[in-house]
Image 1 (cartoon, one colour):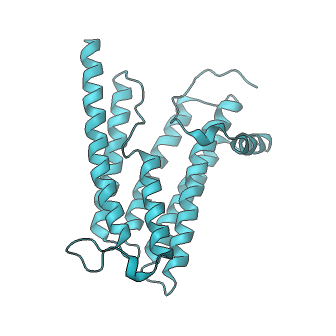
Image 2 (cartoon, rainbow, N blue to C red):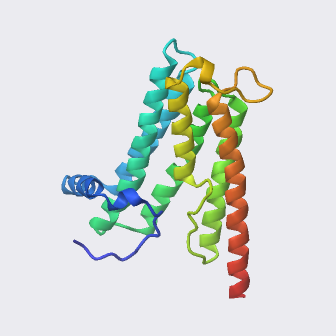
Length: 223
């Protein structure tokens, strides 16, 4: 194993400690798969997820496309975890790699949430608002890092939480009978995914505010 010249701050994930995760990272590293290519794979998966979710509203089999979208969201999440694990295990972690990881990740958030806005039982405007809110939440974290504060990956609506909410809502929409499907107040065709995006928007606002307050307090202590 090569020594690390740079140690990245990584999002705390319980799945990173699973033996299966370590096995997958070792398998990829042994075959020369680079961390950056895994990051690109995650972005491609997010494009597919957004497209599948959006297509669910046009298809005669919306449940199928919602499930495909959920599967691709999970693939994106695995790529986001494995790129860092491979980078660390092979000694390839670098500041350039962090840039390669962060920029596609923000685009991934946006395309997935916009796709969710066009999904079966959703509202397109909410998808766009959620995408902006998610990117701003990440911006606050990055801005704190630029000012010399440790990365704040906390919620209540960090990236993993956002994707969990969307996956849960999509699966509920796909498998729960129509009489048990909720409807967003004032919008007859807006169901569980519209409600989920509303939760994501509110949660991102709360997360951004919490991170800003914490950042300000820490900067005050440093002054």
